[in-house]
Amino acid sequence: MSNRISESEQRVMEVLWQESPLTSTDVVARLSSQDWNEKTVKTFLNRLVKKQAVAFTRDGRRYLYSPLVSQDKVLKQETRGFLNKVFNGDIKALLATFVDDRKLSESELNYLRSLLEEQAASDNEGEQ
Image (cartoon, rainbow, N blue to C red; front, side):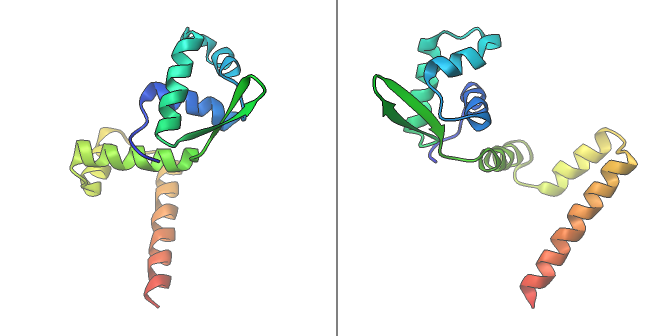
C-alpha cells in the first residue's frame, strides 16, 4: 500500500472490511450518516485504488470493490505515524503520557502486564 489513508478514506475502508465486495452505491448506502453523495464516495474509492488499498472487478456495468489491506495493517501504520509525529518515535513518552493522563483500571493494568509478558517471552525465544 502506498501513501497514508485519510480519515474519510478510512471510513470507506471500514465499510469494505465489514463486507465486500461492494458497489459504490452499496458503500454510499452504508455511509448514509456521512451524508456523502455517490460522486464523493467514488472519489474516495478511486484514491484508495491508486494507493493500492482497494481493488475492483467489473461485474457487467458495475464495479465491485474489495480491500487489499487488512484493518490491522492500517491500524499499525496509523499508530506508527502517530507515535512518530506526536512523540518523535519515543514509545516511553507515549506510555508515560497515557498512564499519567488517567488512572488505569485493574483490568487494564492486567491486560498491559500480559502484553508485556508476551513480548518478553517472544524476545527470549528469539534470543535462543
